[in-house]
Length: 457
Image (cartoon, rainbow, N blue to C red):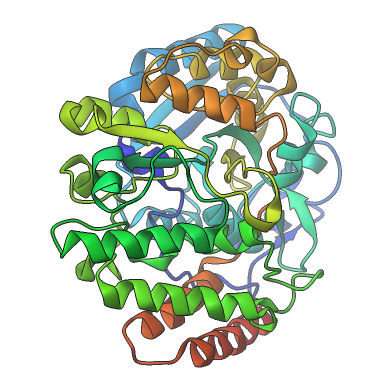
């Protein structure tokens, strides 16, 4: 599993142009009258009513860069499913997971050729749900929620074209959130690695210490705010959208402007590489070269460092990501499994999606020693493997820290459409470049976000 796949669910964001026009779900009196996102589909795929039909036929299953490290596991899951359901065939597609993933997925959906079962992150699920390309799992299988921790099932809802929240995803796994850092670089910067900050502005103050001590020889973190929006705002308790999700309100909180001012100050003072402002690269490479003090907030990042840079791994430690106003850790946005509403064999696709994400298969994969990921089913999280973690190395400590967090962690997250997210990010980038004041950037970001929300983007 490549680092980008698990070290940041926002690595492949692009501006999407999906709108409600010509999309959505509709049914008809016969198959030819049923559409999903503009594609003709079986009428059983859309509208109200439980999905019925024989679990027979061929489907495609798409993951992102998993085959190299986990080929045996997923081939085994596929074989078990096909054995349990004679007459089915699952073709596994392993996407490279580059920066065009979201745009290519959208293009496949618009061409009515999207994979039957697909692993998606929250931004992609937001766009595809709004355009009507994903099966309403809560409607098509009323029992779909049963295996999952309620809070994780709650995160699996996304708004359709009318603004109604529907379950178009199954929560698959979560990575948790923590600090990963180079102890030597922190000590050189006058920061005590054993005392992580308790607020995000406290973390920013530590970033500033790195900038002042490094003299450009190393950096604190990466610049692109796409890695921090909306997660920082959520952790700080900044309300981003109105309760109905139809308007942006983040600019009403003065801490938003303070956050942008901090980002601009840090960028100007050299806490971040100048060329990383618009780059979608996560900290993986530079951290492994000893040039960035703070690594990814995803626990599996530690595995990447261990494999690719043993010397830096020896200097790596993990700590608690600041709880800030939220008061608890964030579980991070889970990865999801969705079923295409355009699937020609939707009963097979839904059955396989539920088989893949059941407690047995989640537990088996999350126990793989090569990953630090956690399951989303109640039964899996009760397994002693996730509750009794031993070891003092960074990899073991990351697993232990997140296992402890998940007992009380918040799974609430703000799901922004890629278009809205990118307009906020672009305004913050202008402020960081000194082209706008922090106050103007926040004001303009909120106005532009509201324009998009009114358009249904």
